[in-house]
Length: 192
Image (cartoon, rainbow, N blue to C red; front, side, top):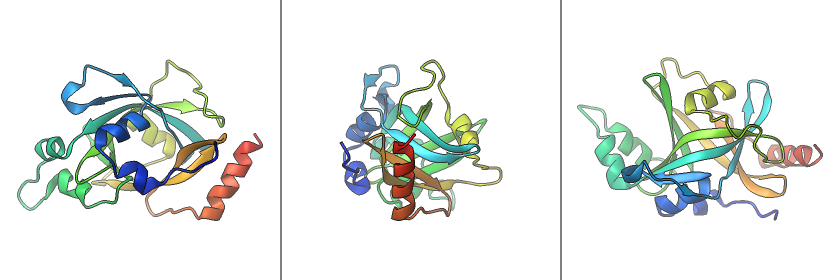
């Protein structure tokens, strides 16, 4: 299977469908104690020590209504709900929190998928240590993301083929890989 994912088509769907297709486990915000098995997509990204591959371990669906209720604006701040709503489907929003980082993938309106945890994978997409769960703060550190003093960071997902499987490439900040760079990376990884 070498067909790439259409980012807009993948994310511009009902949030529960996106959460199911992103996470190894997925749930909804109003039912956090329950987990359903999902499709588990792999995200490839530059890390502090080269290229890294990560499975979305747990994805939590926030509907538009839940997002607006949980992240309302105050005073002159329109809030995260409006911030998320203003992005394109598939945009990754990374917010620093108290001793954590919140990482969201925008779907429709202000609905989003909270990427609650990750697992590290090898270049073939196989999980390295099934017991090791990376929270977003550790994930951000592996990517070399420094959020000190930042209100948020924006990331973009690109279609990517890892070991003949459709996956994503994550670029954070101003870096935007070209199609040629992504194809070159795909070829390098097929030879590993």
